[in-house]
Image 1 (cartoon, rainbow, N blue to C red):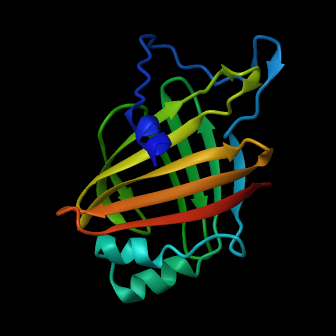
Image 2: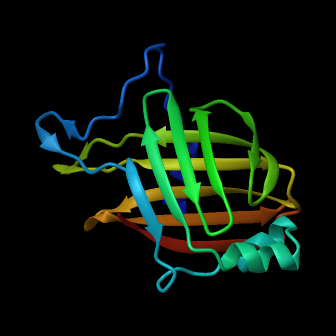
Length: 183
């Protein structure tokens, strides 16, 4: 849990106004990247139902969302996170500015405010850290929360997606762990 709190508090500020792709090669060492296309692995993933319930999402919408097969495509640059999500019911294509609070219209969840932060990682104990992407949802749900996307250290073709929400009064917390495979 401390690791997640530390990851949430990391805030990378880019002073350049020029956008560039996050490189897959750093100082001569190959680094895996979150950039690419990812398919939800439903067999090894937990259900989002309890998290969505805590957020105040109704039963019918929860059943629809938790039953969807999902493909997500990410392109992360120094200033933006480009996100494409395809399901049986929708196609969503959005670009977010990093470290900026934005109003978002999510086709599955509706209107919300969120902040996207990317930690590009780096060399740690002679191992290239793959970096992490954190999306903090600010409102309008019955709870506050975040989601973390990060490559598994032992498999750069598998991503862990952790969602965590806590009720506003702090009495209830729900966490969901989902896995995606690189396509």
